[in-house]
Image 1 (cartoon, rainbow, N blue to C red):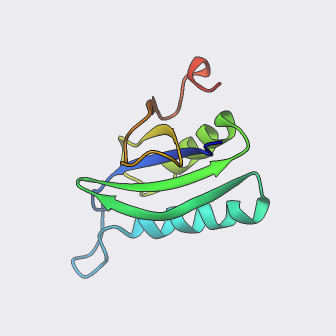
Image 2: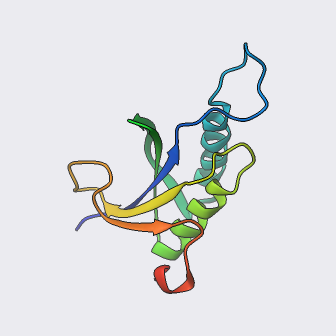
Length: 114
């Protein structure tokens, strides 16, 4: 049986207000730290390491319910320094490519968070 996975697609944009010598995508570390903390709570886990794909950076989470996963995806999109425009893809661990699934705006509307 396939395992539900939510991909969190974040535009690969530099964080605003950085000095010239600062890493422009420091928000990636912020999201990774946030997701690592979730792993310890047990309800939602990181499914795989994040990955750059074209003009987005994708984080992967899995867990007990779609609503819990979309709630976490919304929290990721709302983190300080995370660029606007993030969205989620509800998919499973058997798809062969990124972005193959149902697209959900973040934060999701109540009707889309089954």
